[in-house]
Length: 269
Image (cartoon, rainbow, N blue to C red; front, top):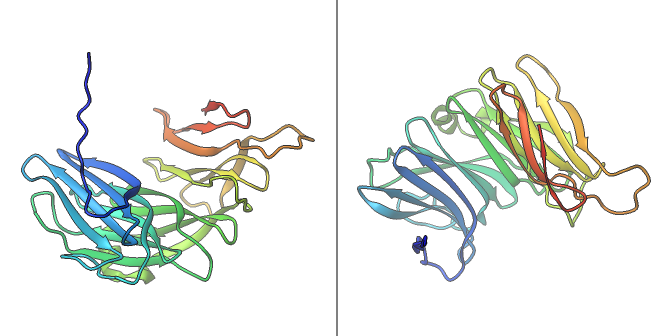
């Protein structure tokens, strides 16, 4: 007896809505997504007061946007809200990693976006993004498709301070080497405990299995364990670890759902 209401949020382009990422802050719902037609990052927001509103963030000009009209911006978008309800979006732009910050509060009807490049090189980076805001301090995890590696990009201050400082506020490090493959999706899933320990799960093309890397406060290197790999001597390409999704249980330990090499959905804790 249940029915579903389907609402059109954005139809301003002929091809729009790829890589949607949703987050909520109080009664505000936000969605970041890619406008294929215009190679642009868009953001839509719902509040009970204003309903659905749509904003241009990057990749094309528009009121309050970053205005980088020549950039191919918005793929692999990942959205979170700060504790004050301000949207933070990480995304790929011209094969690099960018971050956008909307300083306005949910009570405002407009945004003034600030966009910063935070991990660029000649490599193809910024794929399969996952982001954590720990007390508004950003930690971003993404895939370097050229080098075959998962990278962490972080800033030691709150996101507003990091954005005001610019690219130099962000530092990058390699979480783990994965190797590359054209047939397996590599997207990290990350969480941080209240004490600051980081966990990152991802697919390793080198070992054809799912890996989990961890790094505690004060540690200088990542510890990596492989929790599901194919049997020795197997001749097929294992898909164990595709599409991982990780959460933390009540003991601040990781629980991961992922696709297995049998093409099943498995759960690790």
